[in-house]
Amino acid sequence: MAVLSARGYSVLSLPQFTEWLNGAPLPSRPAALLTFDHCYADQLENAVPVLDSLKFPATFFLTSVSLVHELPDVAAHWRNTVLSLTKAGHSIGCHSHSHPDLTRLSMTELRQEVLRSKLALEDALGQRVSAFCYPYGAYDARVREVVREAGFDVAFTVDLGGVKLGDDPYQLKRVPVLGEPSSAEFGVYLSGRFLVSGSVLLYWKVRERFLDRKASQPRREG
Ligand SMILES: [Zn+2]
Image 1: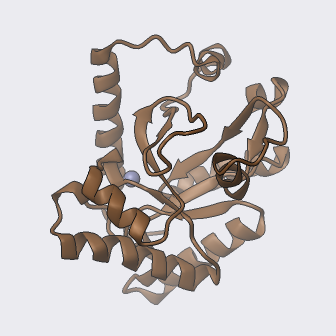
Image 2: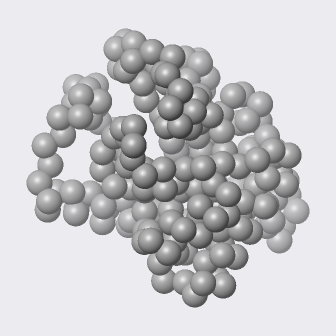
């Protein structure tokens, strides 16, 4: 975040990003959008204070199963969490209801995963939820279409790259930041000069998938 700040990046909120994708000018260049999948405890404990101190808005993608948890305390905790994030200027997006690989579901199950999560999040927030993030980065034409039909404006993958005008809004690339890259490494990500071979990229995706799966195992607390 210090590198973004030092390089004069304008860190966009989700609404600013979506407006830009629809043709509005950027507040300034270069620009970045920060996304976090799952609202993991370490994101809330470590990342949010840094983001808030720099006034960097971010988007957190949540699985809605947390909001309708059988334990009322857990459900209340997540409702409070998403409300306080939006109050601080961050955005909340959908990461499906229960984090399945959406490409493997029947049409009925797929629609349910996508719509149910949107409705549950909107109910908790009292506002429209406009962004989706594919669990495990897994999507195909059918999944994209269901997400679009459900009324999302944008959807994010774990395909490596930046976003440029004219990109399919339901197939947006990201640059996964895994582990703790040095400032120099992170600077290389930002430059777009990440020269990665096909096999490195595959490793990256598999690793992301593994991390995502491991971390999405049911947890007792929060
Ligand atoms: Zn995930």
